[in-house]
Image (tube, rainbow, N blue to C red; front, side, top):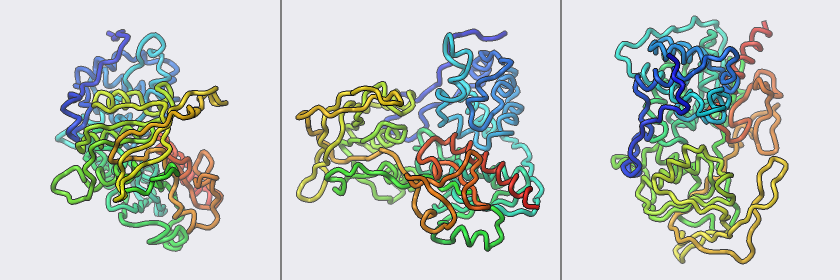
Length: 463
């Protein structure tokens, strides 16, 4: 029997007061009963619009039908036929803007919880005692290099490996995973899950070389000299942007990137690691995207008493996912909306003592419909804080740009590439944040998928 409930099965969560002081995952996942019940809400539309909303074209109604029957293994096979990282996507995709926004059930109620079901299937598969045999595709003898082991690089590598290519991924850090490992906190995406997904790719035959900075350890030209026939650049956007206001050099000012890397990759929250990290007490986070929410929630868990989100627009304009904002509020993070920082203040020793904000009013909407903030003259005030975390976006690192001839770049430093990841240089493909600037995990995965397809066509066309 179809389940015609107008609302989703709620996601079980760790209590807000408890979780604000630990790094365990917040969302606990569906039970099998909840998953089957939720799957029965799917109408299995003749023309599934949800699929069009998915950048990696997961066969959504098909996998959900299998969940409804209780055949979770078949559901996993269907998902992984197009998506190499289902446990990651089920957790960090903005489903409400993608697949779920197109769901017909969403017209008169809530959409089917596609993301929660994907997560359930992936977690079920990981928890199985008896692991399925991993099929290692036969090698076709063509060697491809992938730069960066974030979502774009891993997806591209996985897809190429499935087609039979000999793929080597070069990662700058000591651990593979890119932004999945250093950017997204443990409580939102447990690192064990990322490691398990990467291990599956390695078992399929993808080679991963860490501590290899392309542009420094070796150049793109040298990769070709070494016999690689094509290179996919998925090096992300790891260069933090700053506000360019007085006081940004004071002690206690961090980029969200630095804070999150120290905590996520270098485990600064664990006593047994001696990664240096400041003892926060009152923290201002500038920005209001998902990264700002992550940084604020991390600061809270590191023991900060007060954490403030300072953002120049209002509540309706918050760029972060609704779920992230709700989680942050439940954990006691305070929002200082319609406030724009104009200076960071410090003491004689050069330590942060406060942030000067100026109140804003929203003016007329611009061509995109976003209302621009306008400063209210003479409304400056100071918020007492001992640390400021800047989370206003990142741009691509200039290393590849400075060491690779034949590529063209956008004004913001991204590599110019078409929808298939084809760049201005023969044999070089690119995708993800290295092209677009900071965006979502799933869009980077979509770009990795498109890049793999283009590389396959390119190699076949060369014969």
